[in-house]
Image (cartoon, rainbow, N blue to C red; front, side, top):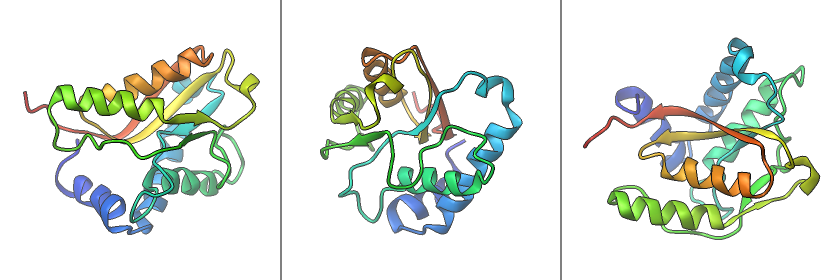
Length: 169
């Protein structure tokens, strides 16, 4: 649950740039993949839901994915090496934090539209993708990114998050 200590640590990474938390979250990601082989079966790419290069204080999702790659010393999982992320965000878009549900959906649509697949386009055709993010609030962003990846040829997109925001409805 995105509350208490976990929320605090995600914020330390995301808003204060405390990169040690990226290493811990990367280890958690690899640990989850190791302990859930049935969910990892058939996954062709493990991809972070990207942030823009201008994200301050850092691109936190990319930092987590880079840490996961470093942790996966046997290369057991289809993670992209640092600096070679397959999905990148080309432009800044409106943030969805502290917005209404409609505003979150509009921000998610804009976010997905700003994404570009940087790998060989043949790699996405028919692929199963595990899309990783830090927090799940309304689901709009994961849904819009998944729709974008499916429109680009992915056969299946699965979501995995560090934490789920408690429902406030």
